[in-house]
Length: 298
Image 1 (cartoon, rainbow, N blue to C red):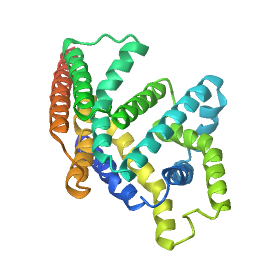
Image 2 (cartoon, one colour; image 1 turned 135 degrees about the horizontal axis):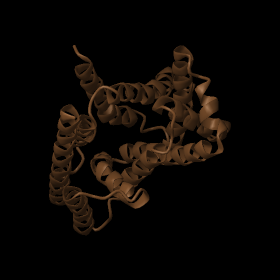
Image 3 (cartoon, rainbow, N blue to C red; image 1 turned 180 degrees about the vertical axis):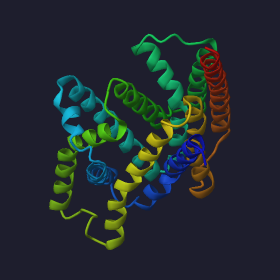
Image 4 (cartoon, rainbow, N blue to C red; image 1 turned 90 degrees about the vertical axis):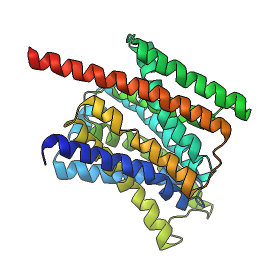
């Protein structure tokens, strides 16, 4: 297996874990979302710190947290990713996994729009059409259901802002995420101390709950490491295409396992989003192939 094939396999594995993770959070529906989030933060911190120790890169955390500019960026990223995690966990627990999948479908298009706003990146005609179609889909769903898909928009925007913040960091993804969860850990500890002081904490009450909460660390960290491995071995166009496996699996889980309602308005909105993504991905794929041909001919 060549390096590109290994990269694709790692990417598929990462997106599969992300796409099926809603089943895990559904099994923890009896634990309040804020408590699950606190455990996810702490156990992710332990997991990533162990990974960096094994790799001999733990000293890079000093570099990430030492400079004032990078520290401010990491704080912004930490706030954005904690909001994203909390919204996702909550959406699964309250029966809104369908909306969560829509949010991750919209996310790439939100990222394009944020890039245009923050970095003044010029949008090609296909990108403008895709972003516009996604906006129409959200408006259609809002009018049809009588309520805006706040969870979808919140997930897409928080993850888009997270990516925007990470764009300004020079350290790798594992180092930066470790720094983020280190900064969030005191808040997580305070939440769990308050919860357990009131006699309501889930951890330690049963071995199954304790094991599942502790597993949130590897569940968070392993796909990120696989994604990082894949990103160094495949083109961005391939990354963009394969990552749609994540919301697709979320959508299938919501529909066939959680049996959430898929209404007429959902069908229209999802059809628009899928069309927008097809336009966006096709344009990105052609652009990537043209760039590679130009590089090979030079």
